[in-house]
Image (cartoon, rainbow, N blue to C red):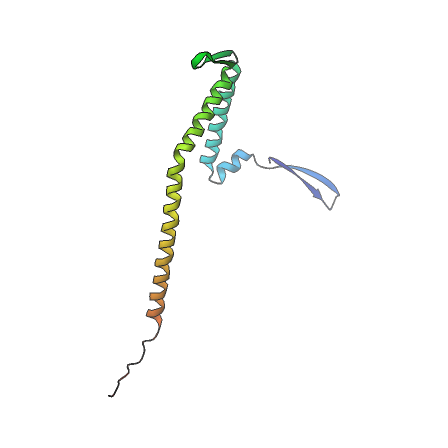
Amino acid sequence: MPFFFTYNFVYGIIEFRLQPSWVLVCLSHGHTMKFLAKIFWVIVFIAFFGFALKNDQIVTLHYFWGYQTSAPLVILLLGFFVLGAVFCLIGMAPMVFRHRRDISRHKKTIAEIEKEREAAQQAANQAPAPDVIRHS
């Protein structure tokens, strides 16, 4: 927020103070890449919004066996984009689940190795047992 209000108890008034600009705050705290990414996405949004405003004509999409549908070009493009994203997610699902399974297996292996290491560390820190000579 670029400004804030404070209550001055001495004079009993509400003061209005301006904070440093959020741009300067972002840049001064080492968040330059985050700031540039936000600027990039704002430009992309404006470009796509302008594209949507310029292409509001009704288009007809012809399917097989005589089916057809009419809708604004932007709606059809957005629908096919979403459909493509859904197909990509469905295609990636087996790989993601395989990686998750591998990660859980590796975590279990790491836990076992750490237990063995701790046991070896405890054995190394303990005093050796005294030698016992048995007389038979």
